[in-house]
Amino acid sequence: HWFFAALFALPAASQAADVDPFSDYSGAQLFGRFCASCHGTLGFGDGPVAPSLKVMIPDLTELAKRSGGRFPDERVREIIDGRAVLPAHGSRPMPVWGYELEARAGENASGAAQARDQAQTLIDRLVAHLRALQR
Image (cartoon, rainbow, N blue to C red; front, side):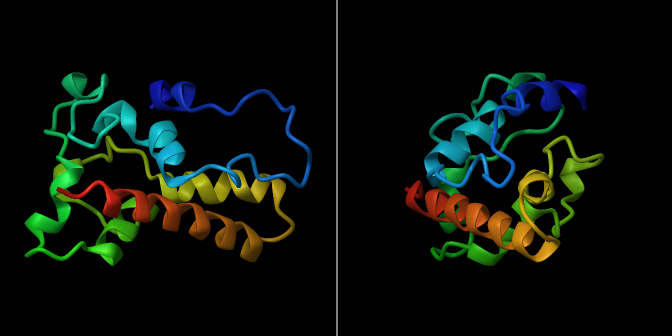
């Protein structure tokens, strides 16, 4: 999807070779960068792109409620990193940001393991932010 690629393109190659461009991002900043266009800034599923999609965007503030009162940390990680395939997503209208973060970290990291570790750190920040959004 060219739209998502253009929307989330990194700033021009002004980044230093070994600097992870997202390393200082908080979970809220990562959410704003990668998730809010569909899920909305507060996670209600009301982002500016949501009306143009064919699927209903879930309210992320009710993940714990929908999981019996307990926040589903691992399930959320699986959705972010692409391990979970959601039938409602069909051809994956939600970009697989876990892979995206790992690929971008890998552009600046020395080695695949370091890229995975950097991506996991960013995903952990996103998961913590989503946990904090619960009503």
